[in-house]
Length: 154
Image (cartoon, one colour):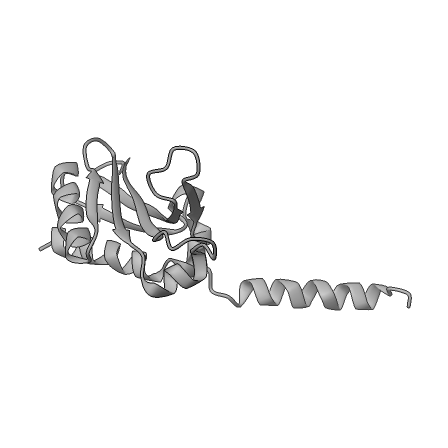
C-alpha cells in the first residue's frame, strides 16, 4: 500500500489533535517544573520550606533532607506500588522518594517543584534503583504542593 499525501496529512492532523486535546498544563512550565509545581508569592524560603515539611509529614513522608534549596522526603510504597514496581525475586519493599526544590522567581516569588521516584532496594549502594515517575502519575504530588501553597498563604 502506497502512502498518499492525503493519508500523511490525515495522520499528522490526528496526531496533533490527540496531543493538543490532552490539555497538558505543563507545556508552559520549565521542564524542571513539569511534574508538579506551584508558584508562591510574598513568603520567604524558610516559610515555604517549613510548610512543605509539615504537609509531607502529614501525608506520611519522613524528611531526609530539608536544608538548602532541595528537600527530600521518603515513605514506604503502598501495596499497589509493590505490585507495580517491586521485585518478583525478593520481598524487599519499594519506597517513594520525592525531591522538592525552591526556585527563586523575580521579584518576590518562589516556584516549589518536585519530582517523585519509586526506589527499589533502598539503601543498597550497589543495587538501589530509582525509577522516575512520569507526568501521568503527578496528581497526588501536585495536590501536596497545592496544599503547601494553601497552608503557607494563610
